[in-house]
Length: 67
Image (cartoon, rainbow, N blue to C red):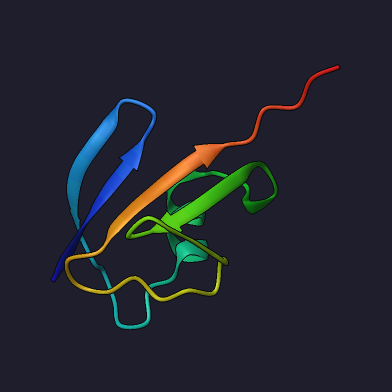
């Protein structure tokens, strides 16, 4: 079982390492903070508790703060 990860220059297929693997698990694995990221699953905005399913496309977008 795998999913497609899109983040910055990354566009790759990744294996789902365990059952009930969530967006938060993915962020932790990548060393990213949920507070600075927006997550999309198959084009729809999702929360960190969302489970990643086989064949999903997960896009992570970094929020940029400025002033």
